[in-house]
Length: 261
Image 1 (cartoon, rainbow, N blue to C red):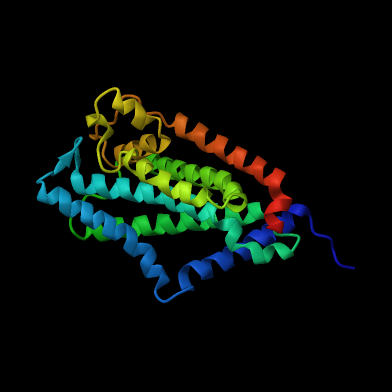
Image 2 (image 1 turned 120 degrees about the vertical axis):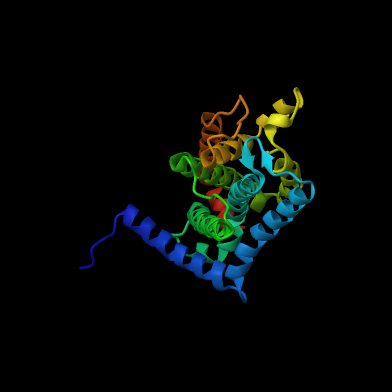
């Protein structure tokens, strides 16, 4: 007689299968797919480093401009990619919903974890490559860096989980999100240090929780970096958890519609 598995064992088996499927799909779905994952952030970082070198900007807020750019871009890419991947997870996993064990929320969680691990690997690789050019890439506060990285991933997962439902039910959602992401990019402190933005415009920037985490991430790499006074890691944590729980609630309410779309 076959032993009946517990709900947790079934869920864990589903996550394992989805993780393997996602890993193969992300890395081998087209020629040199893994290289493109690395190429995009490197192009952005290289372009900004070139611009800042042309402008003869060597130090920003007490930190070397190259590290300032690198850390900020990698942090934002972690948030943006996790959010984007999570938001589109339901559509990508639709053929699997014929199996009753697979739920839309499983697809979102597994894709977010996969993207977080990929961005962690890419970030470490880019920093190691930078070390070959004599940049100081070892963080002064490794625990703060890890905490900041987790918060960026959590924000991406929470917002992506929340948006994955309307993306399937309302066709225009993705267009609106793509439109909003451009100002979010500029309001995240990636291109301009939050400290140099005068009041009251700074208040608009610090409403964005990503700006807090990116500044904390830079501070984790260099203790001499001058963070803005209003910085708080509790705020992005609360935003990320609230978005995640709201997203989970939406998945529970609209689970049947998501699998039948």
